[in-house]
Every structure is written in structure tokens, then in C-alpha cells.
Length: 66
Image (tube, rainbow, N blue to C red; front, side, top):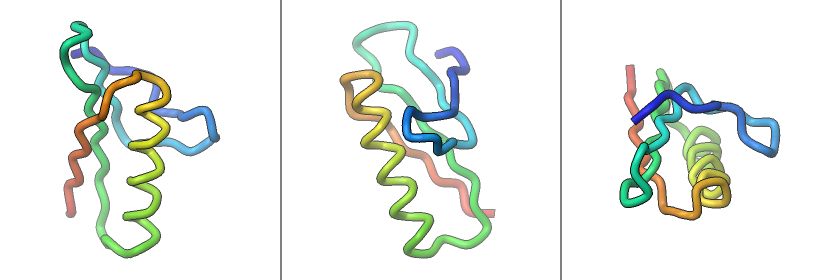
């Protein structure tokens, strides 16, 4: 994996996006959050959908609650 652009086409931004070097692997989206609420969950789902558009593969979403 390599670190990829974390800003999405819709202007939103993830904390960290890891792009696979192999087409067989899924991209990984990592989000750090203090408070997990409905707004955060909707944003995370949106990032996953936009990542699918970019990579044409379902992403792995890792949420780290701090």
C-alpha cells in the first residue's frame, strides 16, 4: 500500500487513504474520531462510496475512536 490523496472529488477529506499497489486488493480508508455520531457515520459512508467510484473496488473502512 501507498499513501494516496485523501481529498475526494466532492471536496470532502478522509484522515488517511491507503491505495493498493495490486489491483487485487481494496483501498483502505482510515478515520480518527473522538465522537462517533450519526453525522460522522454518514460522512464515513459517503467516503466509502466516493472511494468506490475512484478505485472501482469496495474499500476497507477503519474507524479509530479516540
